[in-house]
Image (tube, rainbow, N blue to C red):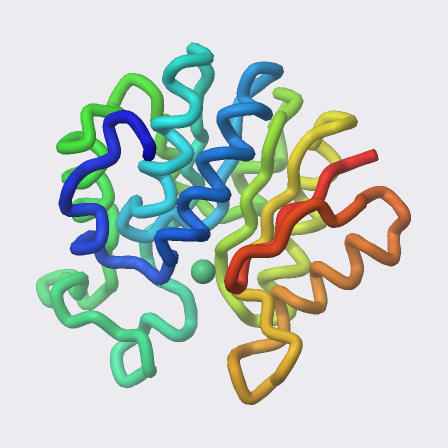
Length: 205
Ligand code: MG
């Protein structure tokens, strides 16, 4: 039971299971007592809403980072392309309009701070320590590694690192998020605390 969860949450475009949403909410509810949450790869705002609802009672914020031009797999002709999100006049994917509509209708405009930029651009001048980082951006190895390297240095001790789309078997999905997960574990900086579907939750030691 998540207070304020929109009744249409399952109709919001996205790739997050209800169990994963609950785990994001539970971890963010605790973590956001000590700082803001940063999400990488907000797409249409489904996971952002779970994180925002967790931040609200703590007067915390979710920085929702996404260039909103879609990852590799969202481009025309690719497997996860959604024609509804294609801006034909500009010839680009644009998930920001749908994102904003969903966040507004969930009543979270004062909690969610959209950062419409790439990961490296946004990280360059970043100073704010983060209580939780959720990596759910592009699935190429280069992109996933960039997200990890840009943002993990800003994660507080004791903070939560969540990574979506962990598939140990390459037949189930791309391997880049799992490579980032293994890198985090091998660094000695993290312990794994929870796994729900393809979502891994780690804590920074
Ligand atoms: Mg994902």
